[in-house]
Image 1: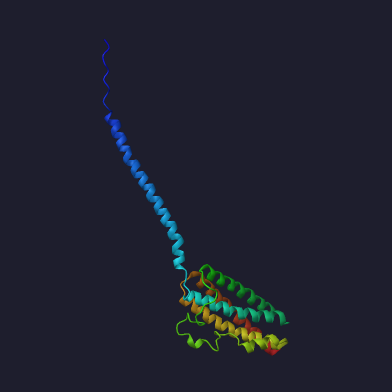
Image 2 (image 1 turned 120 degrees about the horizontal axis):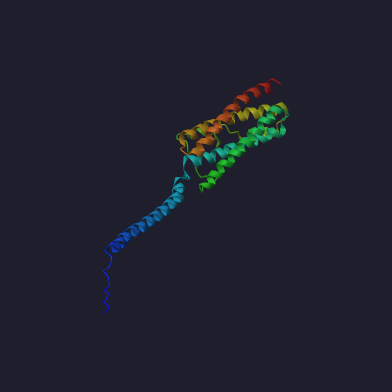
Length: 221
């Protein structure tokens, strides 16, 4: 007689193992989900926060870049006039260096304004980004800028007269530009603006020394 085989009782250790495995799986899924949510939020923050950190339309940085772009544009024009009209090789070289350097800096400044979704020109008065700068503007011109009459005379000048006028006007222009750039370094907390403003101070102070030397030679010739 074959004895009836009774079904064995469930393996308690196996049940415990399965029960124990479910909890780690649940926590594992939760950890992955938390990681994904954190990653998504991190990416979102990375995209949004830089935008929030961009200088605004009425910021020191925007004012500086706009005004200095205008200031540089006149220096480039004066340098191109001297480069085309002077017969002095040293002045021709200086003019080329000024035009190339300042046009390149205009490119940087305008690019940053575009990156910040700001207009290349603003509605604020020139130098409004500098506290107490009201007296710095004369006939609508920023410090060191040549008047329309001076620019017209420079375009007509030739020979020694051209050299002396160019060097005299550019020296004054550089002095005004250095002042503006120093204010930019002092007032801005944007590393790009600080870098380019410091570059302007260094380059233009060096050029002022060269201009003084060339001006003495030109006047004595």
